[in-house]
Image 1 (cartoon, rainbow, N blue to C red):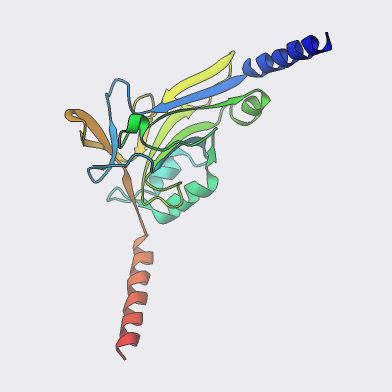
Image 2 (image 1 turned 45 degrees about the horizontal axis):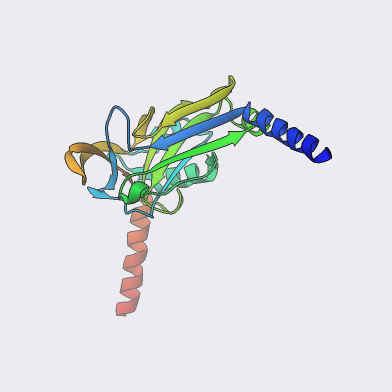
Length: 213
């Protein structure tokens, strides 16, 4: 009898947790825009590499846009600031849904008070990159997915190139390797600031001169 009561109690607790939850589905394998393959300079991100993460950051879309220069590149400082301030919602994913290069599909969920207390009302951002995370990616895409909504009773949304959201960094251009009828998104490049680049060149020149002597 005690075992039965314990089982019922456990089920009740589980159901109570599920009554308050947030779910974010992220994919580029569906949606009104079709199959938008993720690429770097026309080459799809290989299956089993790269990352896709749903999360939040105190940086506003204007903050992020301010780190993109006139050539459409994101500064290294901007990337590192995003990496330091980004909190992942659930688990990040990688490329290779159904073994396909440049395509991803996943779902992240947080249940109970952890969602209510930490996520409701926060900015929802999707970051896509060719590294293992933001900090080591030389190319990124950033998507503004709005806000994490209240769980009435559950919050669920679809974001990514196959869902809702605004592409803040990256460019929709090119065609998918699956066929010209499908589009693509090119990840934006992360570059050092001009001053940093000049210092790097000067340092390299000094080292070269020293070696020649």
